[in-house]
Length: 332
Image (tube, rainbow, N blue to C red; front, side, top):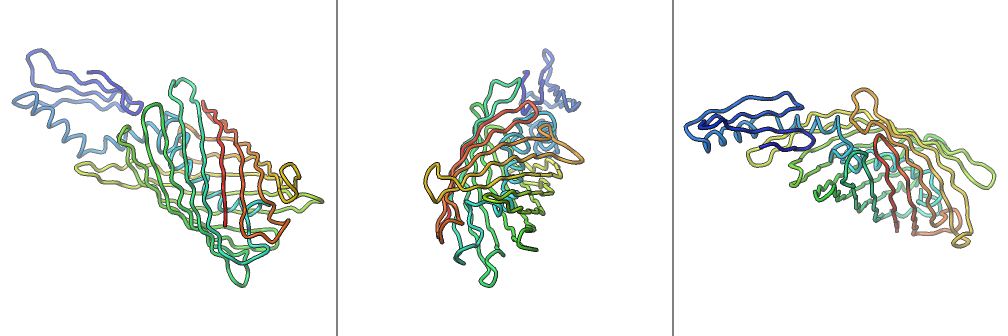
């Protein structure tokens, strides 16, 4: 039998009239054999070896280093999406659309819907992501610019005919150091699982983001920077224990222009942003991306509003990867 599992070639064979099962995981350089009284018992020994060794974790780690379709680090992967969410918790404070506390001190519930479609060079399978970002923002009564942001993004990723899901729970605190400068430390715990791709892992992360707003005549420019650390953990399911042992340091840097617009009404704002993501130190295959985004929504400075809406689209390019995404968000 010859096959391919998560970008690793596998060869299993018996010699004629033999109960010895030979195995070879080609890219990992892992090969050997099991001999028992029958072929069935040899196969059981092989299954025990797979479940009790670190083989599955090594396969996931190999895929993260060699493929843009990895459910952990690829387009739509759990670490990729967690980093974008962590950066957004800070970068959104520059927005004229998302409320930052000006006008009223009420807390905010956020719901959204996002869809992305990505192509990978050399692969016939497209990657499609459907996400449901949920959030709750708690404002400080004395200084509403100080905010605790709890986020719970849920994502379904389809790669060809294979599905994976991931979810995370994050907490971030927006701490204004001046009228124009805000620091946002945060932490997150995520889980990714795919029966189709035999993948399961946890991810724990910490991040520190900075935003700086530059007021201009009639519009504003914002600069955002983030450094985050993302590490997979061990996950046990049944007889299997999986530990991909992936640890990455991610940088995200972006610039945004926010300006009033009358395109869709007198109380609207438009935003144009460019965000660069890259890893430092150890790197996965998809080691950097650039994302260009345009969004339109309610201008928080136009009225003392208690609810806000934003819609936009983004174009992303990275190593062997191109894609478009659209999103809609509502805060109330």
